[in-house]
Image 1: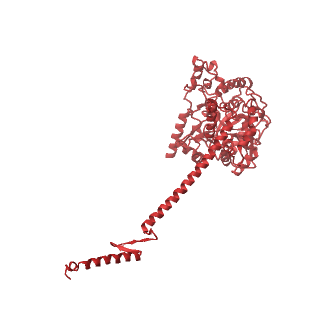
Image 2 (image 1 turned 180 degrees about the vertical axis):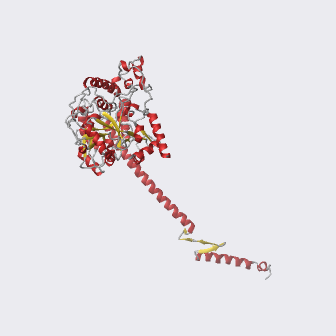
Image 3 (image 1 turned 30 degrees about the horizontal axis):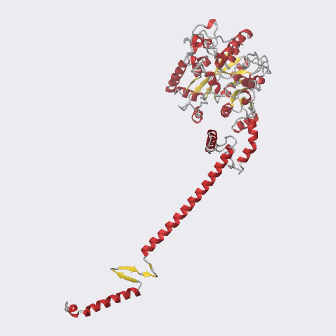
Length: 590
């Protein structure tokens, strides 16, 4: 066809174009779908455009509107609830404050007094806490754990509480602390009552033979050291023990527990003394009353006394039963058998009772003890108190044969306080019960034994070892000092007290001063009532102990300590321990 054919046709071409557009319009109206430029579009149906993309958008918008409506509804509901609660709270607070606040002024301004009352009640509401009985406050409408309205209870008690405000409320008075002397077997009524002999015991003049000799381990302790008793039972074996415990527990209950732990039901005697009744604060432990009570239950010819923190070697009972030992005891009713005492160092660096570390290393046999001394993990007892055990011949004991005796030639200090095996009889001096708590409670017994004619002789191979416990409350009470004496050497205390600096110190308010004053009374009593029958003299180079007393000292005690070191057995504590360690090292090398 010629490109100019349409031009040639003229009107005929125009007519055909018009017809084509009409045909296209007809086809669009008759079909809901058509394709324009390759895109399938949906036509209007019933007057609405049915495009899928727009329909999705419409559905999303509808869901958003529904969610927003729900959120608005919930918020409105919460606001209504909060508003209702606040209205009720304000009305309750207003009602509670109406009795204490003044009327508002005519112009509806809140007075200062009413404002303060409202503020106080508001703070009370803010500070509500759970009570011990499970309730939550006392504001009206607040219910306790059982659903009971505490506000009603408040109304009932309102009148009675207002009356109580004007009444003097009497607080319950604590029960008075009973005198420990009501337990005294010696008939004591005051600390200054000192006694010569032990009542209700067999006579010492009655002869005994070696085969009849037997032993009871005697001790006393506080409740917090009951855990040590089973270790004593295991080391002492199935043999008699007499124990007094300062506790509120029943004696039968305590004994049953100990039997379960391995102590002998047949041979263990337990007495208890109420701590709450006699020393609720724990600062004045009645140690000597307890010791005498423990003595009173002894049924054997002899006893071995050791405080509970001194654990016996596992062979102690068998050594005492060696025939030669019993023959020596049978021949001398005033033989005081010294059991040398050692101490083990604490196994942990921290100042605490690390039992799990300590107990496995507590020596049971002499070779274990010597091994610890060699490593400087044990020593003689007590390096801080040279006079306490310095008269014991430790260097000689190291090589002393099992069961052999070594008589002490002299006593180096009045503070000597060994643990002993002695015959239990009436002439045995008791512990002086006026000495309670810490300080001079055992040394006074040894002083009386020596003056009464007892021979001190140490026993080979036997020993006790001190458990490294923490300081007791009694010891801490003893350690208290006025600030003027905090850094003063013990030998210079009297000089400070007699100076202007010490003139204002109330000495008798301190435990140590009271004990020192009682000790001076005891020394006077001992001198006046006990004939000096000493078989063991004081050493020529004995320590001058009275120079350390706080109260006063006699004219003959004005000199400084005579602590000479020319004793043939090396009794200076530091030197003794060093020599023991060196000798054990030499033995190990051999």
